[in-house]
Length: 330
Image (tube, rainbow, N blue to C red; front, top):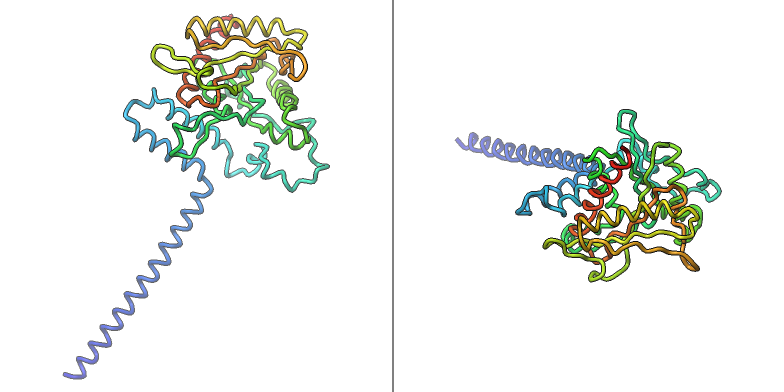
């Protein structure tokens, strides 16, 4: 009887030891799976987090997402940030990121011919509009997106405008190369931003000779009382058109800009601050508008304008611009 009790105790202890070992092995296995998952997640973290953010916005906003400008902004931001293909590291380099140029010997940084622009797939409709930003780091108010740690900037307008024009059957190219990086590579100052975008415009035109309209989108530095209009109970970011009079052939650009401004103001009264004609010492005076008779510069809102206000205005611009482009193509 005593012998059997002793055997039982040994068997009992052996069983407990086996359970501990199994638990330990399971813990290791789960940890390996978790870290493997985190590794995969890291490779796609931009897409994952922004998709999650879209879901949060969609679930947290009581009104339909098709009328929700914050949701649309994040959707455009998702497209803007996830254009890098994680399976092709060279796609990161093609964005002109400063992080991948620090260790390149200075003598190799020749930029007379810029990095390849966004290519158009063979089956895609041919784009006729080129959207770019000479000052891509101009920011808007982040008040609507503070919980998500997102600061919207003027580059995002390109994708909103592109999407809205595409709905009208008008296709665009958005310039995705880094203007600050071109300035850094050439050791140019900020005032040379238009010289940097000129390189990109020439490259885009060479690759896409059918391009007709070149639109440089900016954000002004004025107070909100100046940069905001209320139209039918909704607030809009006001627009200001800029024409360089030091372009000898500025007249066609001015006529085209006046047509857009008049149509925009008649459709959305109060949305425009008019056309600012610039020349003289201390200003660029040309703004690359000598590149074509359909090169225009638009200031959309100011630093205090919200995402919603900028979205409404960009949709208004796309409606008017799309109608005028269709008229000219007839």
